[in-house]
Length: 254
Image 1 (cartoon, rainbow, N blue to C red):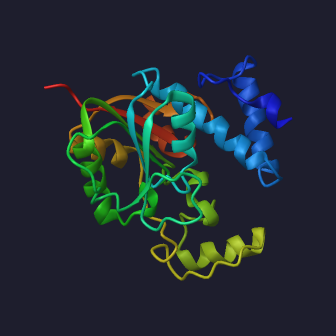
Image 2 (cartoon, one colour; image 1 turned 30 degrees about the vertical axis):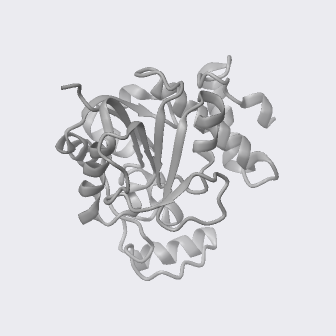
């Protein structure tokens, strides 16, 4: 089933369109831990990101940075399918799938000014302390070349999906959220605060303001999971109903 629901190499949804995408989400929700399916899921979402970016720029042969890219799977995909010169950045790299990984922090990127054509930051900022979120976006702006693109994806805080291993109880005091998560899902959470769990509030509106404050121009916003992109234009609903909001930001030419 996994192979049947993949999107194509150009990053577009499979021929079944949105219904095919929802079948993919359903499949990954319940089967991603089975052997081989995690890789299929990674390929699927990497191609979705490629498709979203290629609405605004060509990726072929571009210099790319993935901030907080984990084991480097996305860098591998962009290298193999778009021939990008890709660098994966991780604060504590381990069990890497991609050799060109640099150790570093989002607010102190170890690269020269205007070094990258494309900068990715997917599901990272909600794990960075609030005081360091704006400096992190500022440094992504610094290393993006003029005319380049920065892709920042967050789960807006008021969406049930945003709480990671505490969802959907993360809007409650930590102790209560921890107890409810264990009661309903059996999770044994050892941390004693949201800070210890490295989970910090970030809303759609605040992300938009941080991107603009850094100097970027917002070119578009995508509802990466549900594909209801119009929801990004509805101020209150977008905070609650978008599980993963992807901001495509451009650095203006002089």
